[in-house]
Image (cartoon, rainbow, N blue to C red; front, side):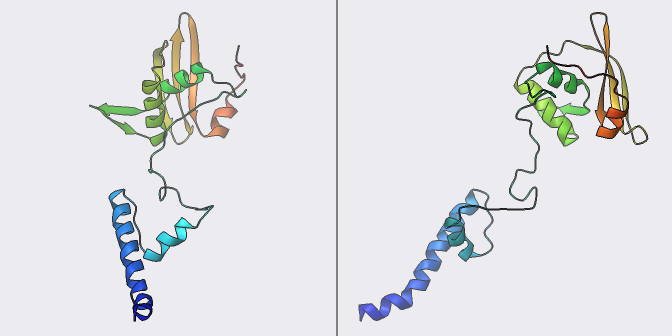
Length: 162
C-alpha cells in the first residue's frame, strides 16, 4: 500500500518544494517564471546570456582604470572627473551613467582634484565631444571626452606615464 501511494504523491511533493524555493528566491529579487527552471539551474555549470540589464543591476560602475600603457595612473581618472556633467541633489547623482560612475569612483577613492577649470565647452553633435580647459600652476591642459574618432582626430600628442 505504501509503495503505491509514494509515486502518486511524489509530483505534488516536488512541486511544493520548488514553490517554496521560488518564494524564497522572490524575496531576494529573483523572478521565477517556470518552477522546473529552478531544478535546471541547479544542474548548470555555465550560463551564457545576451541581454544587458537582465542579469545586471542596470547600472554602470567604475571598478578600475588604466592608461594606454596599462598602468593605474590617478591623473587619468582625475582628468576624466573634470570632463563629466552630473547634478548632485542631496545624496543622489544624476547624469549620463558613465559620468555618474566616474563621479562616484572619484568620491569613493577620495582622488584629489588639483586643477582649476578655466572653461567648459559643452558636448555638441557636430563636434561629437565635450572639452574642458584646465589650469594647474602655469600649465593649461585641454581634456576632451566623446566619440573616439572625434577625439583622436584632434590629438597631436600622447602623454606617457612617468
